[in-house]
Amino acid sequence: MQNQSLVLLDTDIGNDIDDAVCLAYLLAQPRCDLLGITTVSAEPAVRAALASVLCRAAGRDVPVLPGAADPLVGPPVQGPPPQAATLARWDHETSFPAGAAVEFLRRTIRAHPGEVTLLAIGPLTNVALLFAVDPEIPSLLRGLVMMGGAFSTVPGPEWNIHCDPDAAARVYATPVPVHRSIGLDVTTRVRMNADAFLARCGNPLLKPVADMAASWIAERPDVTFHDPLAAATIFEPSLCTYAAGAVTVVRDPGPASGVTTWRPGADGAVRSPHEVAVDVRPDAFLDHYFAVVDAYPSTPSRRSPLE
Image (cartoon, rainbow, N blue to C red; front, side, top):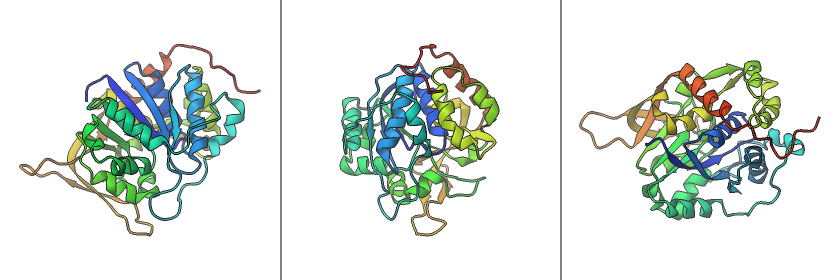
């Protein structure tokens, strides 16, 4: 992938704070043309409102559309977003088009064939529906980058895959020009003390992130940069080392549902369909993340949080 990129973000912002940390990075990244945001999992309209908070804080008019609320098969796993409590303190969109997320993704990708990177940092329900509605779409992507899976050193299942293993299995079974997974094997190595992270949130773009983080950090000493690492590899792929091979997903009900298995590609074999991150440079990532976010223009948000 080249450095400059058109990006579509599919996110379950509102539970773990890393989705908001990731979106702030994309809004600040000068090499990112963020074409739109779709949300997935329980209460997607509330998640869309949370995404719009950061877009408004950045002074950006980015389309935000709620997507699927429930997994393809079986009962919901993820609950409502606790970060919704912060919406009363920040300016945000209050009305979103219903049922239009997948069609928005389809039309946007078709309008830019071979140019769009789809960044999926939540359960893969919207992506699976997109691929089912228009089977040509995967071949029209520049690439699919996902935060998902656990492939070697960390036991699974990873949360995004576990929340909709049927969708994940369908997405992994679909050929894409670049099909990259950034899994727990590398993301769990990129951590920052919660107090140290909050101390870096003076930028207007990160102030609402710090507010959203309060409920998450109250029970955890660290912030783990799962989703931001996936996003950063679009622009700085050398932050991680990758291996080619094939990923399969356990779809059977039970605690192993969503476990990802990894088979490295063999020399001389047919081209391996998936690229998995196997190593990371944590310090280089953190330096890169804050260099991008701290450089963002200090434009005041439309509304400050209530005292």
